[in-house]
Image 1 (cartoon, protein in one colour):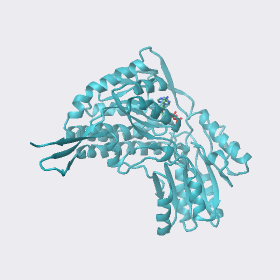
Image 2 (cartoon, helix red, strand yellow):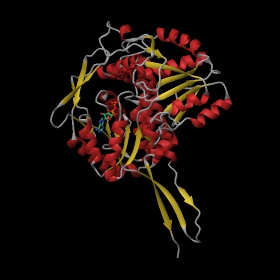
Image 3 (cartoon, rainbow, N blue to C red):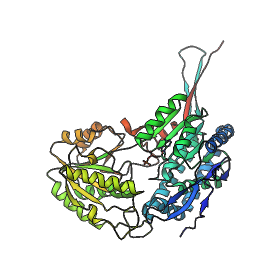
Length: 484
Ligand code: ADP
């Protein structure tokens, strides 16, 4: 068991921990038991303003520090994260709910971003452009953007932070972080690790509390030069609109509605295993998780049979138990949304093949919903258009490749799409035609530190991961030098 104080000073501003100015608090609950874990600071504008000032002051020294020195601090933080995987995973599971094995995986993934950007910090190269006029010198100098406002969600409370904070720090930016109210404890632990690794005061600040007020304080402050956000498309659009006032840079990872297409030549065992992993990991609360599945009609029966066999094996329960595969959803509204999508689909003619309300888990106290599968869905159903963010898998059939690709693309979202096929030619065709920022072919785990992750259309702008992720935090200054 992890011991947590009943009231925590969760704001980290310019090197010190603080309660809210008003002493107001907000509770943090364990979604698997509904027990209150602790209370953290419920802060707003004044605390955020001080955090921005701290970050602005720290920027001068941090941005001019040799990249190697910044890199060394990140290396150290990476090591400290790995040394502490078990404890950090317990904290994550306690406030977020996911099974411990997934939480450990997330902490390792969070650490992998810190390692990657420890390396990338040393590779922030500029350019020397040959001039068309004699004697002229033309240089492109990379320059850190400045103070960054980072707003993160609860579904990956550790890796969504390091995926933003590590490249920002590597580039020489300073940060004011606002985590999701549901999961402030993981955010605090990550901040403590960076501090232990040697981060100077003011470089990384943390403010918990009123999302709108903190968001507004970041948006209306001219010194915040970039907002990096992962969350809903609705809030992303709001941040984009408000950022216009100062022409702030933006990096947005928003919602998704990932299709999985299973062609008739697919390895069905692989398709079943990975569809299951994609849909039910984190209880379906992942922006790149499969939201809808299109299976070729000739393999539908075999695929569905194998899939249901495996869905039946999934153990639902508290994430701290070793044998659990699917933890709770984050809150009551999340459970209601899954039910709403299921009822809408069934009312409009879909067939419930496994799970549903009656399967559900009266022996558990938390916000649980059992893995559920429906068949015979159509494009009119909510589940085929809106993000479900829960363990409900709709299955639809298709005859022609074009029909599946058109259906997959028929959405305003464009984050991730997956395909199962053993044909190289088909892989090329589909990869080129799918309108998504990420395409997985016989793969559903595309979020890695070394590669760019990000959506197109209303799923966002900008990339996280890879060398691309560093560039979000860098301005290119062009210097043109004449000669006499
Ligand atoms: P979700 O519905 O999955 O919680 P949100 O987009 O509401 O997704 O939340 C993602 C993050 O954005 C959280 O940290 C949340 O507190 C924050 N947030 C929500 N509304 C605002 C806002 N108006 N301004 C700034 N941040 C916000």
